[in-house]
Structures are given as C-alpha cells and as structure tokens.
Amino acid sequence: MAGSGVQGANVGQFTIALEEAARATGPAANEFIEPAAGTLARATSNRNHLIFGRRGSGKTSLLQKAKSQMMENRRPNAYIDMEKFKGHAYPDVLISVLIETFENIEGWINGGAVAPANKKSFWKKLVPQRAPLKRSSASLLSAEINSYVKELDILLHAYDDAEIQLLQKDERQSDRASKVDIGAQKGPIKAGLSESLSSRSLSLDEVHETIRRSKIDSLHRRVIAYQKTLRQVVELAGGNGFILLDDMYYIKRSSQPEVLDYFHRLFKGTGLWLKVGTIRHRSSWYKNGDPPIGVKLGDDIEEIDLDLTLEKYKTAKRFLLDVTDNVANQAGVDLREIINEGARDRLVLASGGVARDYLSILRKAVAFAVDQSAEKVGVEAVNQGAGEHESSKRDEFHRDVVDGLFELEEELGRIKNFCLATQKKNCFLVEKDLTSDRYERVKELVDLRLVHSINSRVTVRHRPGRIYEAYMLDISQYTGERKRRNVEIIEFWKRDGSEKLRGASLIYAEVNSDR
Image 1 (cartoon, rainbow, N blue to C red):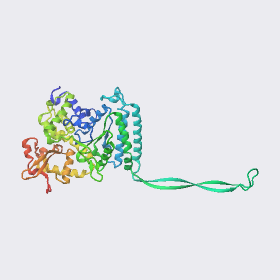
Image 2 (spheres, helix red, strand yellow):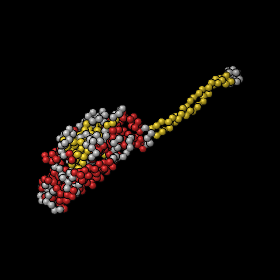
Image 3 (cartoon, rainbow, N blue to C red):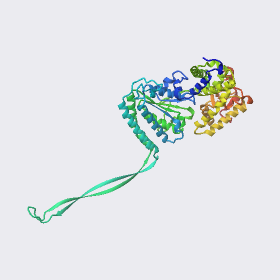
Image 4 (cartoon, one colour):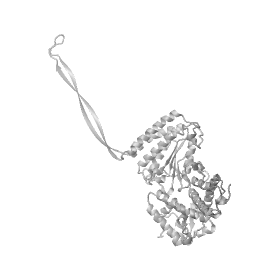
C-alpha cells in the first residue's frame, strides 16, 4: 500500500471511495457490513420486520442488499422510497404506495423473473442463481397487475367522499285483451265472428339513487382479489418475496399505522413479507382502538435495531473502523498511516456511531489535513470536518421533521445553552422514563443525530433512588467554540469520565424540575 500519510499518492482515490461508500445505493449497497452478527440473516428471513436506525445507520443499505438477494434468486420484490410521498394525505398516500408496489412487482415479472442469465445489460453485477421463470404465465400475471395499476390510478385522481348519482331505468310491460268484431265474411267464416286481440303497451320509470364513493372502502373490497394474484406471483417464483418500504418516517405519523395495517393484511398468507425501514422516535406503527390499527411489535412484526449508540463505545468504534478499513483496502491505503489514535476516538464521537457521518466527516478531515500539509489526520482536522458536516445535518433536520420543527429547535437551543454556557461540559442527564414532552423531544433529537445517547443507566450523587440517562451534545454544535468557551469534553468511555457523569450539576431535566 502507498505510504507518506495523507500526502500519499492514493489519498485522492481514498477520499473518492469514502464519498461513494457514504451513499446507500448503487455498488456501495452490496458492501453492507453488519453492525451485529446475524443482522442480514434476520432481515432476509420469512418474517415481517421494522428496521430502526438513525439516518446513515445502514437501513437503506440493508434493504438494498435484501433486494439484490431476491433478484439473484428470481424472487418477487418491490422497493419503495417513501420520501416521494412526503406530505401526501391519507388515503391517497396508501393508494400511491400501492400503485408503486404493483408497478415494482410488474417490473420484476417482466425483467428479473424472465430475463435470461446471459443478459448482461439487465443483470450487471448480479449473478442469477436460478433459471428464468415461465414466460407465458408471467405475461398473464403481468397483464392482471397492470389492470390493477390502471384502476388504482383512476381511484387516486377521483374525489373522495363524493356524491354519485345513479340513474336506473325500469321498463314495465302491460297486456290488454280486447275483442274485435270481424263482421260478415264470405265463405266458410260465419258472420258476426269476433276475434280476441292483445295489445301491448310499454311504460318507462326512472329511479334516481345517490351514493357516496369512499376510496378506502374501494381498497378494502379489492383485498381478496389482490391477494389471489399475489399468491399466484409467489407460486410462479417458487419462493417467498419481500416488499421493502424505506424511510417510512417521511409520511405523516397519523397515517403510518393505517398504511402498515393495510399492507400487513394484504400480504398475510401470500408469501410476501414486509420490511420497513424507519426512525424509531419519528414513527407510529400501532394505534389502539376497536379494532386496533397497524402492526404490533412481537406479534405482527419483529424489530431490527441498527443503531450502534455511543453507549456501546468499543463496539461502535470497532464497527466504524471495519467499515473504513474496507474502503481503505479498496483504495490501497493503510489507515494507520493517515489517522492518529486520538483522531480515531474523536471521529467516533463526532459521528455518534453513525457510519455515514463517520465516512463524511473523515473525508472532510482528510481534505483539511492535506490542505494544511499535515502528515496525518489529527483531532483538529476531525473537529474541522465535524463543523463542516453540521450544515448537512441541519438540512436533513429540516427535511426530516414534518411536525414539531419549532419545538425541536427550541429544545436544541436550550440544551446547547445548558451544556455550553451554563455547565461548560458536552454531556447532560435526563431522568429515566421522564413522562414529559421535553423527554420525548430529547429522544427525537437523538434520532436526528444532534444529541447522542451515551449511557442509559446513571446514578447521581445526592439523588438516591433515581436513575438517569446520559446524553452528549453533537460535536458539530460547538466544534468552533470549544476553546473560546472552554468546554470540557467528558471522556465517558473511560473510568474516570464515567464517574464525572454522576454529578448532579449535569441534570438537565428531572421530575419536579424546571430545568
């Protein structure tokens, strides 16, 4: 491998590789590294899954990897990016997702299901493991699914709860018998003979009826027909398939249980399994009622948690180094020659354990070190990279938060003031299971990567019987101000740092506290 630290010949290639690896789609998806052993096996098992993780934790990479395995085995699959339906109202959002699901399945039937193994333009880097499926049967199913797409598109653009006038025409027939005197006739017919004749008259009655069209009722009525077709798709494939809904948190929280409820019922018994990627504290998957709506964890669906928080510092550091080593090896770079040990710890802190943030901050830190003619990436370069990365986090913050943006920004401002101005430390405490909006907002800020969980169980001196959770303010929120404000970085992963977390002065919120 090339030497000379960050000034080496291959460093430019390394920074490009870091940028590509930070993307969740394309070739990078096939380089998915498990944060915990067995994650991929669980995600590709025949079970419904809610896959939780912060932005950049690998949700999309995992779903894309699952999709590629389905493609290789010619199994039915549909990958839906839910971001495009952000702001859509229910039930139109459900209809839109259903349309794209059927379009994806139709595309799979016409492509991956029947494409010959030697069609390189289709398969690219994938290698099909099974022979093509029967084209005639596939064509019939494709046509049937296409008809569903067309009728759903009409339903999508129709008005919901609209009055529809039906006109029924009822023809009524009446018979009237009459006798007609034929009169005197010559020949064998005798005079005065009368003949009975029938006359027929028609009357037309019009009946007007008013009904209301309900989109959701229309969808419910079609479930059985849809299920029958989907079962035939699975039978044709000879194996189960996956429906992958990525970034569910983009649609309104009030609509999420409704969408999940319909899809869970639709795919039940068909051989298609639901895999949903989302952010935990920006999602709702179950709503109690009569009947309950949504999916219940442990019963209808299982969870996979991709978040490696700083609470498991050593595990997170090892995982992040594995991810970066994989990129470095492809670029012909030895990480030990370009990053010093102190910078590695600072990178873990700055990323909050999130792989994409780690890669992005490292790329910016390498560029800064090169510009400064440094031999290796140091703590200063990481701080600089974290500061530059703040704008990306801020943009994603405004994109991801549909409801409650103002309240979350206010809460972040209060936390920054508490940590940087009042306590001059980067960590704070919140009483565990505190039932308040403030507690929920802190949890949401964790999911948004502006605050990081570092210890879920802390006892505080002079607070007997109370348990607290410890959090760290994201480095990007103060990296340019640490020297001026003299902010202490608590090294919580070390023994003496862990002891410092037990100070009562770090309590930001607790029961009966106005902090």
